[in-house]
Length: 70
Image (cartoon, rainbow, N blue to C red; front, side):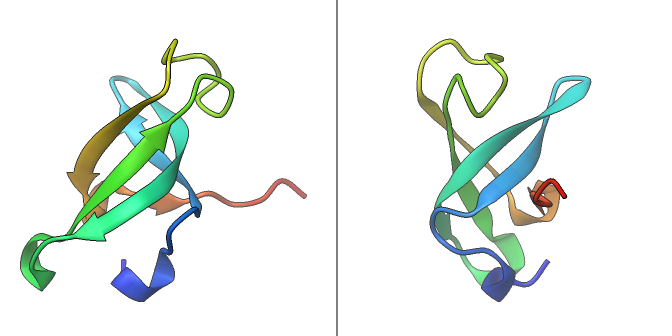
């Protein structure tokens, strides 16, 4: 994924154990070959997988932009 495809506040899907959860991009950082995304997780957006707001940092390659529901 190109760094330009994600922006602050975009809704994304990240791997979470055997499933995936939704979060929002809080920051994209690191050298080009090792880009990471800081994802803000909220109970409502993550379908209550997390019970309080938190953040998680994961490699850019593991992040997918959420597709809006039609």
